[in-house]
Length: 312
Ligand SMILES: [Zn+2]
Image (cartoon, rainbow, N blue to C red):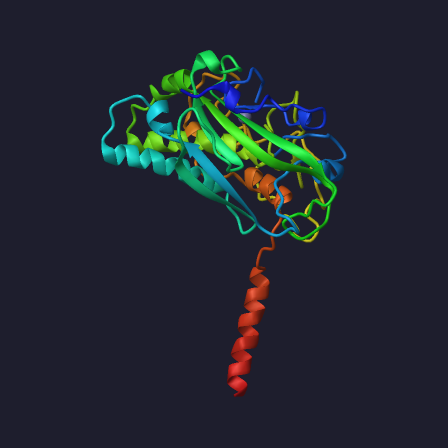
């Protein structure tokens, strides 16, 4: 059985304290764009610059090794499943990480990466914990990133920017509450896989530095305009340009903890969404900027290539 002590004392330090425990779908908060987990408020550019994130030494793409506790899915979903169904649910866990990946952010996921009751040296670890040992009553999942101030922090686009760098994170799931959640898995294995993927995606979003865009109390919602549904276009060379504080929120984003309305126990199809919304992706790309090939540039290259061939 997992023990709470394996996480060396909740390291809520004053500055990292802004990295509040990111409680899963069950915080008593009303429930959209994106928000940072470590939120310094307006102005948006300063908040984006200060927001904690993972960073590779010297910059460039971030690849985060992830260790998932042994038998995590079996322990969270204590129902009879066929081997194929069990495999599908395990895939859903990996798919949750894949959904967040971009040219600047990747995960190296190891299922059954460490035994129950132990831990892993990998910086991102996932555990299943029984309710008696779970420190957040009424919460099904929690992500706890730890950060340090790094004067040499370099972003994924190579931009040097001193600030908080996430050094490790742990994600915990309450076994008993998750079992209740699993009771709704009466709609087939694909629905169950989608529900698990969406739930894990939410906690992974916290682990990479995103907050609840729907949570007015703790998080400010950022966008580049006041449309919460359209793509947030990020200039990789200037990823904070155009950011503003917006009150227009997408309640059904992956990072919303009230995707089905004001009551946490409400159920709706949004609990099965497994695609990042534009706002989720925009938040990721502000934290982990990467260059996007310009379609116009590709078209120009194709024309030049065509002309060059004709000249031969
Ligand atoms: Zn959350």
